[in-house]
Structures are given as structure tokens and as C-alpha cells.
Length: 105
Image (cartoon, rainbow, N blue to C red; front, side):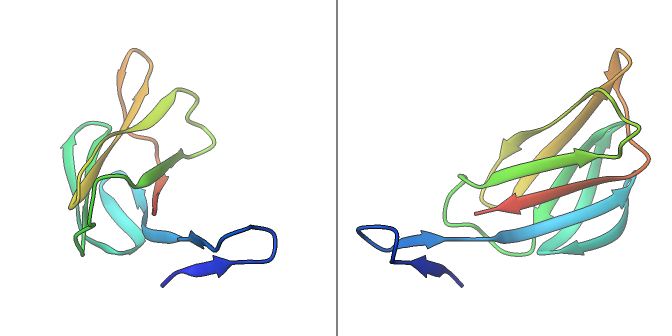
């Protein structure tokens, strides 16, 4: 479903919202939507498999580690069926105690 804005714009602009999200403790899913599974590719590396197929591989992904994790987190690759997310800290890949990822399109 899309929302269209007209008043502030000269032409209607389509806006999308979250299509999939996950909150996890390591590789154990606490809450999710739009995912068929969460795979572990090793310590701090995960693949989020969508329960649908995107028409292209141009989704935006936000990765959010817990507040005690002070290093890097990012998404690695994005396809029409999945996205890979990564957590890196203390000189190597590591898993925050709790983390979230959200896919927007």
C-alpha cells in the first residue's frame, strides 16, 4: 500500500513504509514481520530472508545494535529476496546482545 502526497508537491509523490523488520537476540528472533527466516552466516553476520519478492534490489535498510555496542553495523548486500546485515567490533565480527533491522521501500 502506498500513501500519496499532493498539496506541497507539484505532482503526487508515492511514499512507502517498512516492508520487513526483525528484533533479535543473536540469531533468536524476538519479533519480526515480512521475514520467512533469519539465517546466521557466522558471528555477527546474518541474512534476513523476505517472505515476499521485491521487484528490484533497491530497498533501504537500517541496522540498529543495542546501546552497549559501540562499533560498526551495516547492511552488506541487498537482493530481491534477502538482505545481509553485519556487526563489527573489537577487531572482528561480533553479535550485540540485542539488535534490530528494518527494510524500507
